[in-house]
Image 1: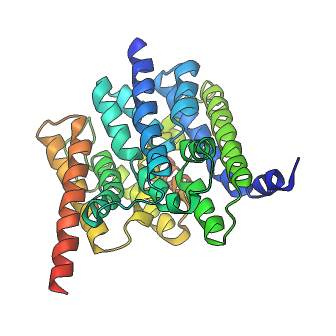
Image 2 (image 1 turned 60 degrees about the vertical axis):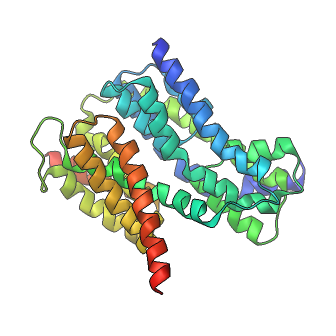
Length: 228
Length: 102
């Protein structure tokens, strides 16, 4: 047990407190949707991205096709690309396997912590990867616990479980609305998605709405700069 | 069931690659400014695009502005705004939704 490892462990409580309840809610929801323990844990083990796992469960429930679920997961999880790109310049000295371990387990929460420590000049790979691994194990275990608990719950609506997914979107959306182009992207994406749904775009509505939203937001940001 | 594992395999691929690609390729390289801006706007756009139909379009009823989900979203927004915590937002949303079903 070296001190880098211990530093990683000491940094883990915020991750633990963040993942455990959400992981349990995910396992519960998957169980209520009729997904067995194997695939429920498969999503946590291989995908390890909460919002997209909730989305997948809900889309499977409404009978969406394979391609549209994967496409939507791609768009939902694409924010990790930017986080990864944001920390990449600092990790030029890391070994390839260390970068894979950090990036493969990168989440909203771990990104926030890593960028904090990296900015302080602490680039210790062992501490960072230990932190990620603890979060990973907690996520998988809490999904399993949630799935088991699901058997005990008879009326998920009375627990507000049907609102776990929209509430999660709200919690992720607000911090991402930093400036006018971001708010425009969100408003356009939301409106386009509703309109496309009403027009019968089905499961593709969110995917296409998001592309429209990001594009209109970019136009607003470019024209805003041209005027200034 | 076979489809389910196909979904998992596909999701694994499209989640893993964007997570690691910048870390493997990017040190010492730069993304074009316009592309970077578009990419940074994908997050708010997709989250709103997933959220809004969840709130406004109940699969069983006609679209309307004031339904229990919109009402439950109000305290969720306020808590998310004040605390900036995903966990607090989810708890507030579930509690509000549970209370509104009674």
